[in-house]
Image (cartoon, rainbow, N blue to C red; front, side, top):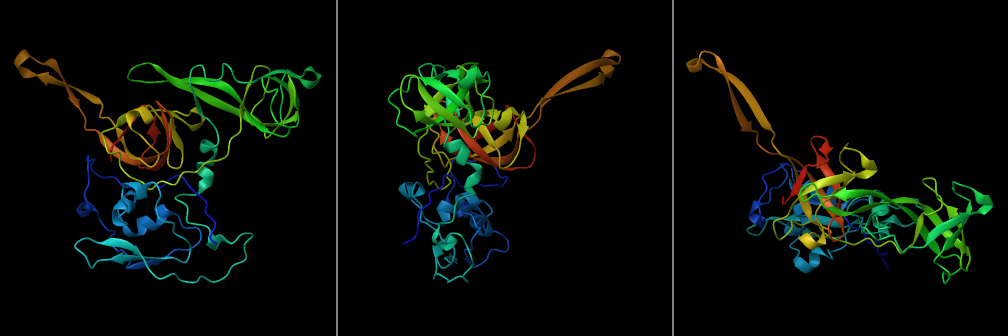
Length: 351
């Protein structure tokens, strides 16, 4: 029986004119589109779609997925054959006869795993950790009150004492966090939340109040006052890419590592979330708003006096992002393509 590994993300990379809605008749095939393709290990759904479509994120349209199936698309496995059917009024993608692949030495039967949307290593850390916290989200969380041997800074292998988890089970896992910088909406200037700075993992070695924990996998120095959140299971939702059904337009307000500019295969934070209609699977276009261009000219009528004219340059679309995790007022999206650096303040809107 094939193993099911659920992945969260499928996105795209083509510069095109934004529209509110697109029909299947708008779909453009690649210039040298194949009639069939045999899926091989290492493929992703995005890379397969790109072999057929100039707009790969429109895979659900070609696959004839309805709204419910977009959230639970058909699994595709190595050895499956994808066929381009041109017999109808519009071309469609269908499943053909499966091909048996040559056996290879693997620690795990890779052929039994469905093809992921993209390599999961990119987004897994952003799905297993909170990343965004409400303004008071850590106020009542368990906290480190002391360290073994009165150490000031803690790292992997060190022992600490925690208040607030007296009922925690032995060997239960807890993630350690510190409140990070505020996420400010550039439009309203309101605080949408705070970044959760992940410091490391820990496990309970002795129950009680305080409980004793041992730290492992520390990514930063840990100290008194840092907070703990129970580690939950990794949930990788399976969403096919699709445009939001309503108009959405937001801004990039942060990027991974706090960098001002970033690029493809990096995660950005948007100032729009569930409350604005965003959900995992939505594809948004990246726009750089045209700046105001000031031009000074000499006016002969007024004996050479300078005349200033301001012209707004056109907005430029330069890439696409795929939303893979949403919170109430912010979202995380993966940059799938960009023909220039992605900057804080750039616009993300319907594709």
